[in-house]
Image 1 (tube, rainbow, N blue to C red):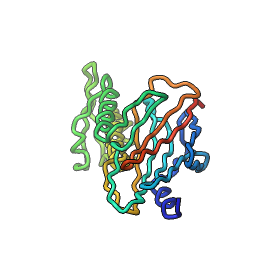
Image 2: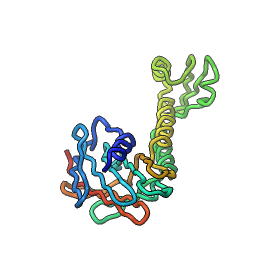
Image 3: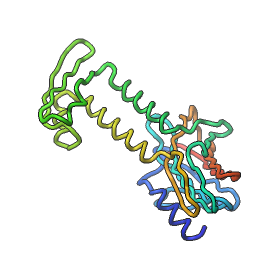
Image 4: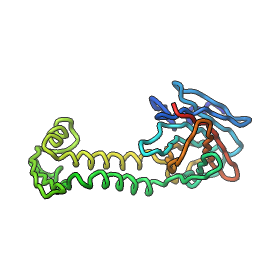
Length: 238
């Protein structure tokens, strides 16, 4: 790859402190592919006629889905659309879904909802940012009612601590959900038009692997026009 492409791809993929999250990824590069390590984290990059592509594994999510960062550099003289529709994923010979940002938002909201059932329901969260003193009413499954007055509830450490101590810990889930949704919109690979000699990158999250054993192979395939970039990793539990 030329220097411009390497710089663009490096900027598109920032190295996480750790990758794998209990899974060790060993790159299995095809002929012509390059393996690089950034603080012990493997990446595979591919340089074909239309595009250069780099893939990096990220920590596995707590619900069992693998995630990767993908960067594409458009080497052609034409516009190129890049999004999750260009990416496919396989575990051994089984193809698994690559989630869109809308699908991920639904899953995030669903997980937040299920974590709240049997614990409490918080009323009036929308007014929290508007009032100096906001009363949160918390209903427990057995009919108990608790009211917590919070001074300027929000995202500061002191305010969050006050809220949690007052029995309104469910609000922390709401704050976390909001931050999760903001992060998804900022980071997940979404359909973007890439100009000639320009790059774009983002994160992909794939369907949960039902079973994984040491020595299994996972593959991320990125289509750029008529080209197909296939990146394979051997996986093992740490």
